[in-house]
Image (cartoon, rainbow, N blue to C red; front, side, top):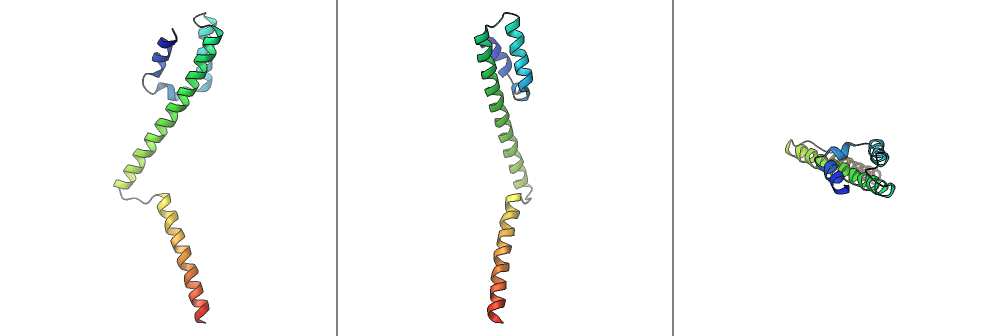
Length: 104
């Protein structure tokens, strides 16, 4: 029974978008209907919450990777690129100020 339930919810990315409340509700319903013992229900809830969180992180990582690759292909500066440029500008400004002070 547990394997069937796990397989049912792990297909696709549906689990990643289930809320904690929805997972808890589903687990409670299965326990109330007698399809799962209390121990099995707690275990199912814990497993599904962990798998849901992992699925969300995996999807976020994939989206981030795709966005970064797309930005790179479009030759658009990223926030990190801009921060690096700002740092270089600050360094050059300090050198220019020091040069002007020593020259006066």
